[in-house]
Image (cartoon, rainbow, N blue to C red; front, side):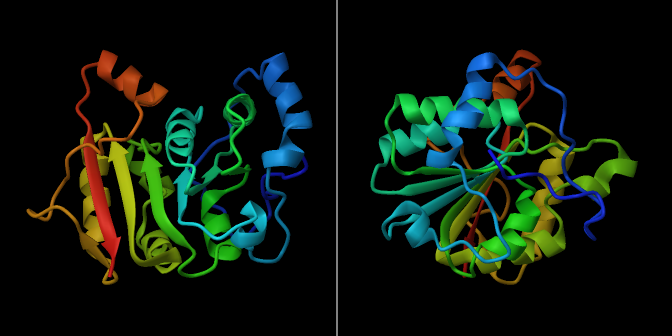
Length: 232
């Protein structure tokens, strides 16, 4: 696995993530070494050619911050006609998704271990993605950390540009203040329209798998807020 997180001197100094020192199992470590060449994406200075990357032209879903990959692997297995590109910065989660992808013999999954904002800005072409999933991103609840939230106006504009016409971004969070923040930010983006008839939140997407973060929130009694916006 040769893809690395961006160096500290990169001009985007405020990041939406912190790489935590979670334990990487021996199996995950082997996956990062042995399976990365098959499913991993090593970034260069050029934009990704997704047709070359997947070896075909197909509708594409991008999941930002896939965690342990439960949702992404379930969707990829259920929809072999679609391609799935996952972005995650935590090596244990990447290792788990590599193992699951190989075990299921899937050919429609590729993985990036890098800052999602930089990937969108520099490596995804405009109009290249039909669907974006951002499920339970870090809410950075303390006011002094709100600037770290990934959903900010410049990010929303970039995200909308990478979506194909009619493409959809779906988000979920169990932190109500962040849900309201995302609703405000995405609602202010002129090229996105809210799919909620009331202009607020939407029902849970039927195919979305329950993630580890969501299960933890359920145990704590947290409600979940979901959003869906379409590219005009």
